[in-house]
Length: 492
Image (cartoon, rainbow, N blue to C red; front, side, top):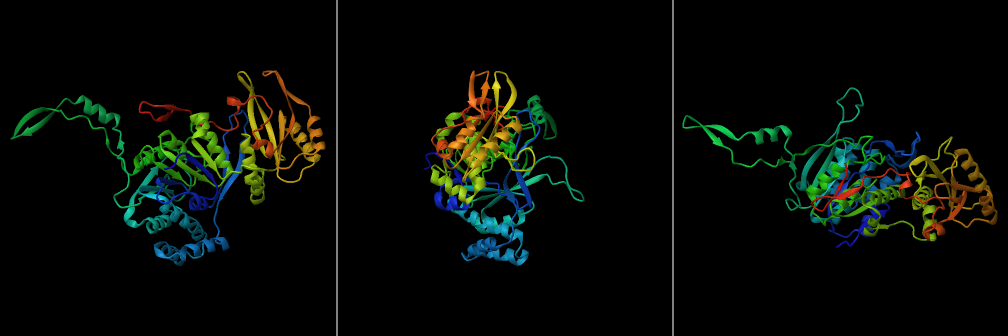
């Protein structure tokens, strides 16, 4: 039995193979990239008075048929069985296309998800019309067509787009069980409409005709609690003003995940999301007293999930889950920097609560991250700390560049995060930048600071006014509260 919830950083295929046991998961929800040939940027909604939005390219939703895709395809085909036959059929139908590359990425992951699912478990695959037809056939091959339960439709309204066709206003959830008729399923009821309730409550008697005679019969039957829920779900998308909105481009509404988790799991069950994104699944699972496993391939998403959990459930949530896959030593950090400099950068910034910034021409040049805060009793002007992250050799010129950026941006503090120890000249440059003085806290802080990775791993942070709730870098999730049934509900 899983003792603690777990958040994994890494490729979900590798994590599944190395860390998740056979038949150990009760419910799987996955919202993989849709093969929609679009680049997603993570947009963090500003709550600091500025108009611009910081953008970070988290992943690129494109797949190309190349050597890597061909190897993935061959690996699946060589295993034999129905999945192999399905993939060979796809290749005959669509050729060595980008869609085949996408399916070659999905197939081994679905195979692993089938392995980890309990006999009583269920899986919901979230998709759209782009690849939905192919994914349905692939799911039939992996889980068995006889284990198909529903094609649930998530219907929503949004700003119309496109011409010469009906407006696309729905996604599809492919719902499969692991064994025919053995899956956990809790019947959910559609609440009665106000009109129906009014008619039922106001009707004390009814007219019946018996043996040709008109009779008045009192109604003694209790009002129904509702009809069993159907497979078309009208749930609004997250609007721009919603409190649960975090600015993540593919964020799904909590109401959608709540419906899935309540229907196909019970309290204490394990819920897995292998494409975790901003963590809606794990947040709802936590609120509904389920155990959970979340996996994502970007440190940016992992950082966002950690902040979401803490803002929603409080600091005590940290003791309820582990994070696996993040560097915990200098050697691990060096390895990450070697493998993926951007992931290293996002990880290092996340340790200090800073938000990454996409390197682009103009105002953000020379800035890798920002941290916004309020330094006055009643909010006041939003102030900022800017960050520069270096994983290689550094000299005093880096500090001079940082000082120039501080002055250009009007920032209160600038911080250099470095893998290697700073030189004596670098420390001298930092000291020469003077101090930022906080009238509220009656203290002063070095305007230019240097933190090594070892410093940060030992718990050292930016020397600045106490952040706490004055930190407005990330959009905060709504707080959870205990409801009458003991579960956590979110404030409206």
